Image (cartoon, rainbow, N blue to C red; front, side, top):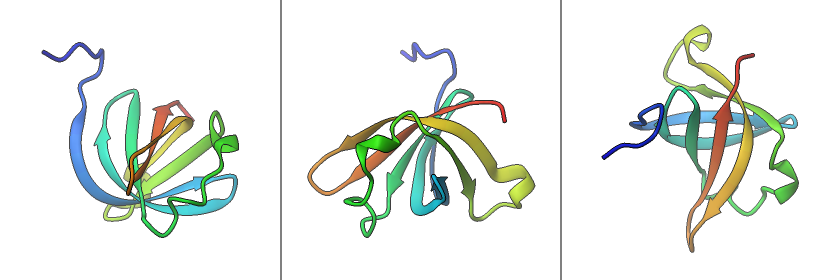
Length: 94
């Protein structure tokens, strides 16, 4: 049973995250009214320093017009396993 205040929508869409001016290719794995979970492209997974946590970021879904597909938030954590790195983003109003 879903206990979140905002249910997640499962996705698999290419996005570009921008943090401190760095463009990071990702795939959005899920999205809700309050957050997003991004899978970092394998070429970039080792280049994300922990200092980016709590930084403002935005990401754009590449397959949609920019006016409808840009989301703003702050990085709340990185999640890792052996081969993958994820960015958890808390969405904020711009």
